[in-house]
Image (cartoon, rainbow, N blue to C red; front, side, top):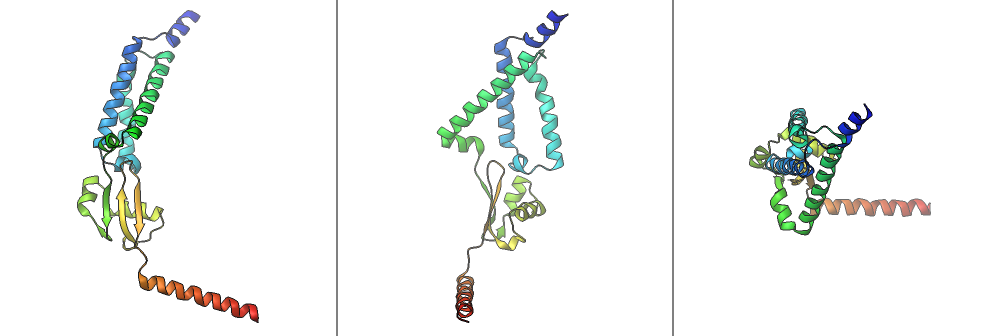
Amino acid sequence: MTTSITTDMFVLGIPLVEKMLRSLVVYLFLVLSLRFASKRLLAQLNPFDLVVLLILSNTVQNAVIGNDNSLAGGIVSAVTLLVVNSLVVRTLFKYQRLGRLVEGDPDVLIEQGALKEDALRAEVITRWELMTAARKQGFDSIEEIEKAVLEPGGATLFYRHPARTEDARHKELLERLDRIEGQLESRA
């Protein structure tokens, strides 16, 4: 009985190279598939996106494990995926042009305060979803935003309108008045 348990746990059900190759092929398939999916899928998951990712992981599980449910097989697959991912990340860091090709370019969603409807449509992002992301970064309205950029990793970056010269002068005058008031209070 003990022999059967240890055999089931530690002896691979398929050859080692096949186990590693299965993991590698599924990894590459998923990386390429997610590359061509919307960037929004990577960072701003709605319930539908989450369900798809969960089902996707279950769908490719058998492709990775094959006829092998052993502990050793799981460890081989996990180590293969971690090593391949580490090599890919290091390669993309070293060859940044290749990284841009694999990851894609950022998409501008708001430019000079105006929504870019075509970019929103291409990324399947609603105005409501964009505003929700903006609120998380401290913006109360679209009018406050000069530029919004959806990065390849799925993060959305928001930039405020630059301070207008009148606003800057107004702020400077208020600061001067505060200093004068402070000086008057200290003399009294």
